[in-house]
Amino acid sequence: LSTAQSMGLFLSSLIPNIQLGLILAPATTLFFCIVGGFYIPLADMNAGIKWASYISFARYGYSALLLNEFSDREIPCAPEGTVSVSIGDSSTMCPMIGDSVYEDLGLEGIFTNFWFNVFMVVVLDACFRVGAYGLLLRSK
Image 1 (cartoon, one colour):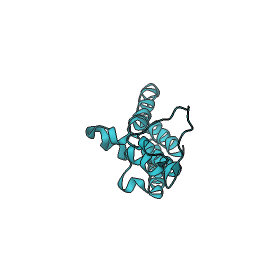
Image 2 (cartoon, helix red, strand yellow; image 1 turned 90 degrees about the vertical axis):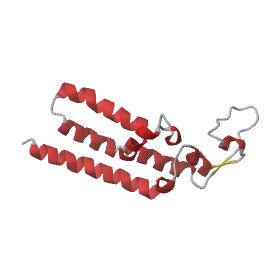
Image 3 (tube, one colour; image 1 turned 120 degrees about the vertical axis):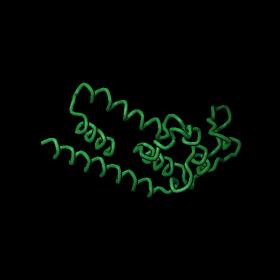
Image 4 (cartoon, one colour; image 1 turned 60 degrees about the horizontal axis):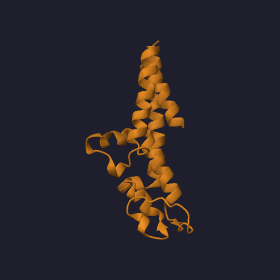
């Protein structure tokens, strides 16, 4: 949440025109959420746009959330008569291993490290804050 606020502060410092800011800031935030893995799983993302997910604050926060919830966990089978949700090929295993959930969503490599994702959120937060501060100093 703090990183999203920092990005909003940075964008409001970067775009001096209010009307233009009201058009560009929500579009930029939505774009970062789309490439962050919320709407399109990282495994299914087009290679031409996947590069943008590396600069998206939403990717690192979402990855940390997935790791926190599913890492080293077993998801029990649904009782008979209830609707179950399938994610990729993992739905055939019962009980489902939590690690396969985030692997099916496209998390791999260094992005499977919880503390790396937290670190990147903090780095992006600091970059947006310092950038906003620099832009405000320049606007004097």
